[in-house]
Image (cartoon, rainbow, N blue to C red):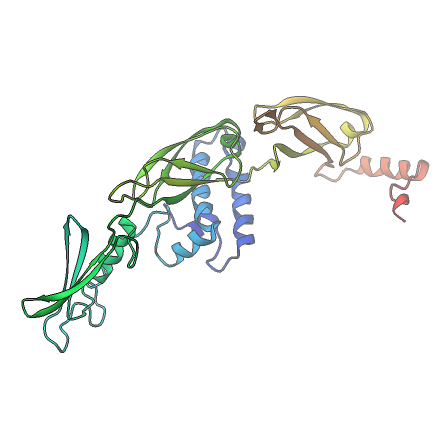
Length: 334
């Protein structure tokens, strides 16, 4: 996948508001509902979702900027400490040769260090991260002794520790939140799993995947997948309700008529009564998001839109109307 900054068309210095605004514009332009005849738009929409999943999350964005995860949110591997070209890594000190090794036995993983050298110290951190161990934890021990004329110490890394949960995130469409579906999710463990999205999920809710976390000596942790609902090009969420700006012509507002209103289930007809003012809201029952007790509603607010082209006849009509039948809609504001 491309660099998420390039996908959203924002610089690395962009703030959270600029990133969200750029994503909303792309979502409106590329949303499959608005591009049913363009199969490529769905792929680009998914790419924009993936980019916003990284840049829209402060922790993930910092991790990407530091090179810790890639453009798909997968962890990058940087190698073990001690193998790199860091000063003193794996070098012999004043007291002669230094070493650090690992063994596994009835007492769990152990580190053996001679002469206090760092050696494979990074590998110890990885083991502790994988198995959930930490110095000083319950069930761990630390012993020192001598062997072969060289001082050494052993340190248990995870004895008696259970598995650990991991966290991941996925961005879904509003239609998926309403109707459910499935999504492929990359986990920090390196696995890619298919997650079932139940209908009616709210933004920020988590799905627990049993046994998909990090292993321990006695158990395996779970994976917690946090759901983010991408902005929709037409609808705004208001709890279980959806809000929609409904454009109507001047003559439809004045004379009334039937207009097509988009919903998550397809377009429906709405009767606009004569003399409808801009801002009037119509409630379409059950056309919102699913809830435990049923479904929310769709709230469609009328927005009168004038023709894009300048019309001289309309100008003359308005002047005649202004002079013959003036009125002041702001008189109650004074």
